[in-house]
Length: 185
Image (cartoon, rainbow, N blue to C red; front, side, top):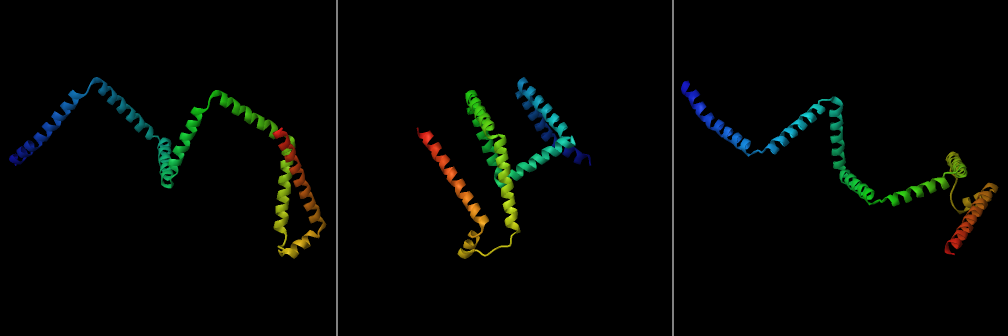
């Protein structure tokens, strides 16, 4: 029995000796800078492990990993990286004068477009459109075709609507012509 223990010691001693020599070689090869970096890295790893013990942090990390996995599966991760690269390049390329001009442009649009008159017009158009949709949805479907269309044209309301649309289109065309003439001169 003592011989079995003695043989186990002799077989484990070479492995222990090799491990001790390897550790001594590593210790001698490491410089002070390397030891400092290793201790900083170890400290950082312990801080991360400590933060992951917090339930909220751990759940946030797991949720982020799940989201990244989903993005990667559908191919959106590459798109997201490309988009961020584009945003970064745009941000880098913009000079102060370009940003200033862009702000002035947006300010001009807001000043000219965000008026009470336009809001009233938009609201009126929305109300008319919603009313037309509701009216058409509540009507029974009528037959389509040439004779059915001619029958609708005989209605005074249809004629007034067509006249309004034609007049509106003509006024738009006239306004576009005036703008084109002033633009070319």
